[in-house]
Length: 196
Image 1: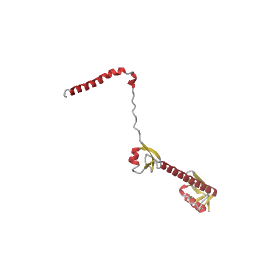
Image 2: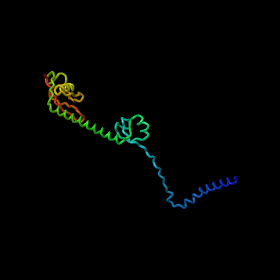
Image 3: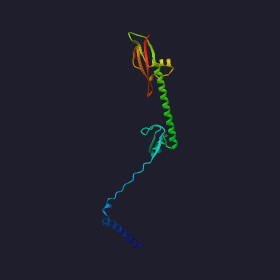
Image 4: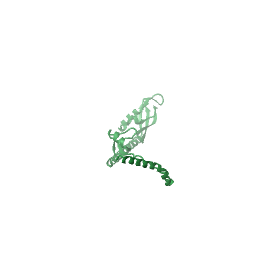
C-alpha cells in the first residue's frame, strides 16, 4: 500500500510537467488565428424600477413624475419613506385622468380671466377724483388700491391690488393701467384722473 502512494504521486507530477512542457508543442500545431482569441465580459445588468413620485425629492424629481430608478434606491429609501410607488396600469390611468382634470381646470381659469378682461376693457374709463393743485397737478397720487376700490364700487368685482400695474400718476389726465389677471391674460383699462 505504501508503495502505491509514491507511484501515484510520481505519475501526477509527471502529468503536470507534461502539460506545462507540452504547451509549447501544442501552440505550433494550431494556426495563428487562435492566438487572437478575445473574451468580452458581460456588464452586470442594471436593475431598475419604474416608479411614480408621491412628493418632490431633491435631485430626483417632482411629485407625479414617472421615473426609472435603481431597485436598491427604491427599496431602501423611496419606499420606506413613502416618497414613491411602483407603476401599475391602474396608477397610470389615474394619473392620466388627474392630468386631464388639471388641464381642464387651467383652461377654465384662463377663459374666466379672458372674460373678465373683456368686461374691464369694455367698461370704458374709470374716473378718479382728486383735490387739485396748481395747473394739472393733484394732491397726492393715484395708487393701485384706489383703482381697486373704484373697480369694486363700479363693477362689484374683487381685484387684488398686487395684479394692478399703474404708472405714477401725479397730474390730471388719462392713463392706462394693466391688470394681470392670468399669466397669459392682461387687461388694459383707462383711468381718467380729474381735479374737483
